[in-house]
Image (cartoon, rainbow, N blue to C red; front, side, top):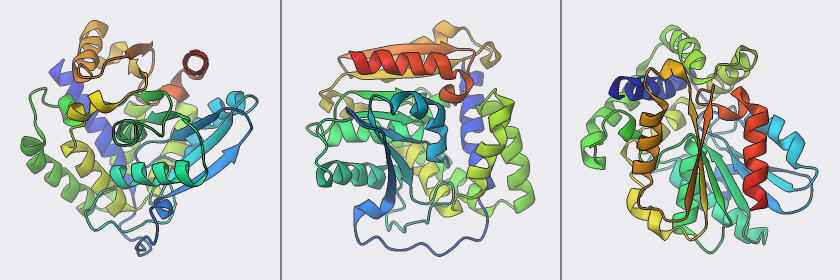
Length: 298
């Protein structure tokens, strides 16, 4: 199991090395809302969808086609990812400021208890919203994300023990040459999504992401342990996660890892999606859509 988890973590982080060495200077935010942009589609009950690391809101395109007939969708784009202008954060954080920006968006738009669906880093943002703004959100769906990502490499890790490796990973991402970055990108995308037809778009999103934003996000994810905060979440949580035989471990081992990671959260449900890599919504779109619809109907 340890080998498989290390493989997954390497795949997830190495995919970020596609960001260009040179990028437009980041701007200091005048408002937390500058850390995100939101595209609104459809009408009905509100759903906020948050993509993951170095991803664009387009990862939700297939799901959005199905949901916007009956729901109002708020498709988030995080600053610095997939060509969106970067925003300077003095503390070098991405997920936490994004969570605050989504909370401010919910307040300013007067949205009442929206459902939140987040993938990867977006799942981390969803957990932060639930724990830190429990009165503002409806049910949460976390897609292929853990409350502490370093558990993938070391089940006994702490934020403190993770920091040196996280710093080394951040520095490596910042210093990679364009040639190294391109090679790592193509290798990693093949491990993150099984569906070949979507790989070019995912690679393009990574290539157009701001390198410092991505590097800061990797460090933040690796040292942020949200497990102590999970009990503050008052709404139901659905955790959807991928499994494939190529992981090289029994599905039961992956099941156990997720349940242990979220053990401090009551009122939680787990759904495993077989035959999928990290981008569940792209590898198993019909299965994922049915899970989402059931989640929204509860």
